[in-house]
Amino acid sequence: MFGKRERLEFEPALIAQITQASRRPAPERRKPWYTIGALGVLVAILTVAFSLRFGNRDERAVIAMVEEFGEGIIANELDRSLALFEDGEIGAPLIAAERARIGNGQGVAELSPAAMNRAQAERRATLMLLREELEAAGLRWDDAELVAFGGVQADVRVPELMRRAAVGITGNLYLRSGGRHYRIEVSAKRCRRRYVLTDIWQWGPVELPETALQPHASEKYLSFKNELNPSTASPVQQPRFIFVSLG
Image 1 (cartoon, one colour):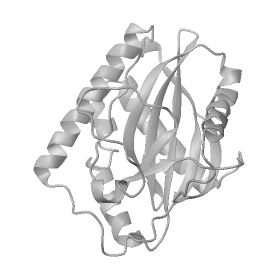
Image 2 (cartoon, one colour; image 1 turned 180 degrees about the vertical axis):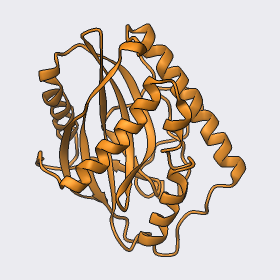
Image 3 (cartoon, rainbow, N blue to C red; image 1 turned 120 degrees about the horizontal axis):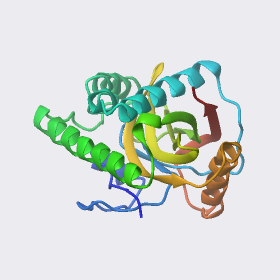
């Protein structure tokens, strides 16, 4: 079993309207393809179809985010990766501006400096565990390369709390080392022309050739879709499948 940590629940008032998931302090596995957008919106990818197309500008934003995050992990320069999260040096002001843009004045209070420091410390511990466990699984960091990102993008709107829809993504960052593939599942929220990371979900080896990574991503997407209850109300709008090659 490979790493999966409970997300940091920074916005419980909003999350409570979308999910009944409870707080758990210990590291734990979770189902993949279950995401949170910043604003604390837990994005369940509910859909009946998918598309491989999304805007070039948005594609560049996704690539920039996952490359910067992945390169920091590979180089063991964790501050680079941590800065991209919603409580990080780069991510925090972007998230604050996005909340102001799409919220309706009933948003959740900003984190205190002490809470942000605790969040960053927990994330750093997660990234260190991620590196240790992937290395134990056979990944050599001096040989690692970013290969692709595959996942789901969706618009999410809770009318009681949001004037406009938020855009979130969740998916796997695929890496290659020694002819084998590995994945890190993350979620992120779009803030204007950038994406800000909100969660790390799980990681581990993927025993597939490179040509099978895109089918792997779409298979997981469709598997999740088939488990959904069509009668369940959802804040998710216009979900779409995405896949981009890296490097």
